[in-house]
Amino acid sequence: MENDFDRPTREAAVEALNTLHSDRERLANTVEVPRLLLVAFGALGAWWVAAAATTDPGANYEPPTSGWLALVGGLVIVYLIRRESGIRFRVMGARAGWAVAGIVVTCLVLFSISLGLVSFDLRWAVTVTSTTAFLVTTWLAGVAYRSAIAELRRG
Image (cartoon, rainbow, N blue to C red; front, side, top):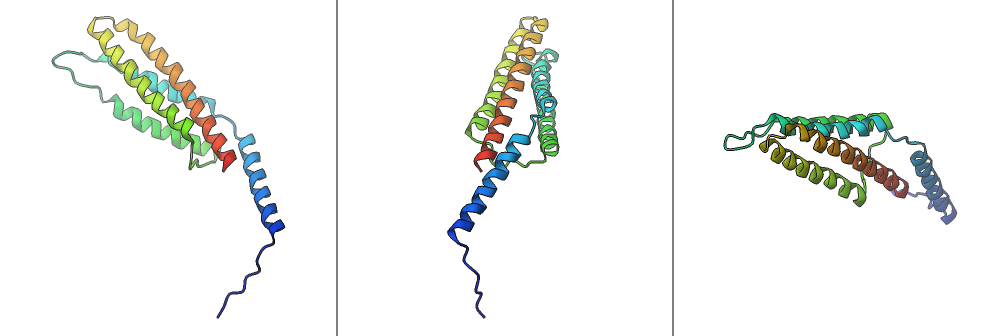
């Protein structure tokens, strides 16, 4: 038994690709940036950096468990972004990868600076590092989201 499919014409294939491209373009144009959830990423970064103020650096230093809670919180926010937008981003693009790496590196550096401030008994100064973490993380989360939308346009 042999399958005898009709081969599509070149024009039909071009029309199908154009329709797919216009659908992606329309979807990318209608997706709104979930600003509140991006701010939640910033708040999560600020909270993790601020956790340094509750530690006691020195010989008896025990790292806070807030890192694991921040990871879980980040996964919850990613889920909420997916639910809010209705889009499952398969590819986010290189720019988004760099933005996420920037978030991690920035928060680690600011956490280390915060530990140094706490060791000099300047716990109040941790508010500056956690505010910086909030601003940078919120901004870079927006960069990553916009990169994902741009990748959605490209297909």
